[in-house]
Length: 491
Ligand code: LRH
Image (cartoon, rainbow, N blue to C red; front, side):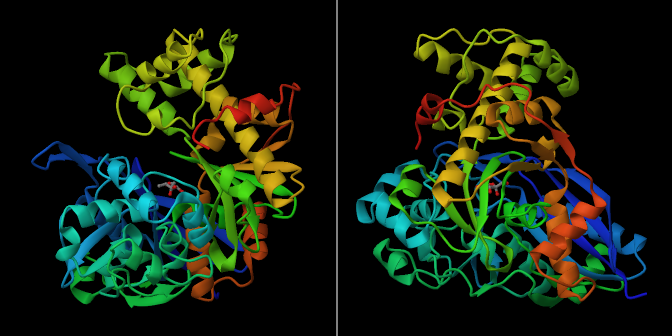
């Protein structure tokens, strides 16, 4: 009674899934109904193979998943979409102008210098509050400008907004993801002055709406093409996956830090307002918009990308890599090598990751990991050191007395990573839920449909009641030393 179901379309950089939540007073049960791989495609562009997302493929797989969700539910009232941030599709007259680029594509490399020659890094930070990442939307758009694409495009839609548009015909920009474009001021409005100074059209992105805005039902033709009879309404959620994940971290924001660990490790604290100090700029911290007007004050740590890209290379080398086995072997390694700087931009692009890691040590005349288990250990240990140092930075820069780290996302299932993060930070690590992003997505949609009520603390209490954490206590005092955090070069 009073219950119903909502679906989440959650697109990650390596896989997408459709989840269903059965929600009623005090009840939230999450079931996965579809999972599909997200395989970027390299397409020759006249100069080089450029890396794109297969958005039509993802849309079709998400639609099939939604149809499966509709079949399994007796009262599917809503659906929300989230994905990785910053990327977008360009459109003209509603039609997509080519496949969206992958943020790991190299096309925006020159754009960074061009943009900074017009508006320097410090001024950008004071306007948009963002850390410097070389693939932030505004750099990508500068590359489109140079290539002449902006002479043709009349709109840009971020990935979840593009899916919402294809589902409903309604074009909006959801706020949490809008905040990752670099073009939104910290007061939440589009920075048209910045767009003009950068030579970008001012009306490219549609108006900003908050998470929890119902856009309308699936277009009848779309519902029919997927085989859905009773079309659910599409509602904006924290469409930036990290915003959805943070909304579902079962934490007390006044005394906790979080690590949302998937492809990236997003490490920080939740605040009421942005921190725009010189110290925050120097530490390359970001102020991204969270659900319900919160601020995600965090830094991007390279994350499990280092591990997944390493395993891809092991497989290319003909070795049948089993992650669980490799992690077990890595746990037994007694490291004879120091950690490496996971923030090094050299690790951003796809390709031979073990080679680049060995190269990082070799360039510095350091003894590095040699065997496969040693490389895995070096990655996990280096990530743990980066997580710990970033938690301490977040605490110092924001004045939050951090007493506990909540580690959510796929990385929460990596026991070695959780334990080393506890060891290196000297703080207890509460691991889970692994599906924080989907939970944050469905919670905001369920609230918009009146299935649950309350603020973020009510949502978090519900998550805490449903998903008990795995707790890792620090076993050693190997805290991240100041020299290690100072050594992170990209700051
Ligand atoms: C994580 C994430 C992160 C962004 C990056 C592009 O999936 O959304 O928050 O910085 O991808």
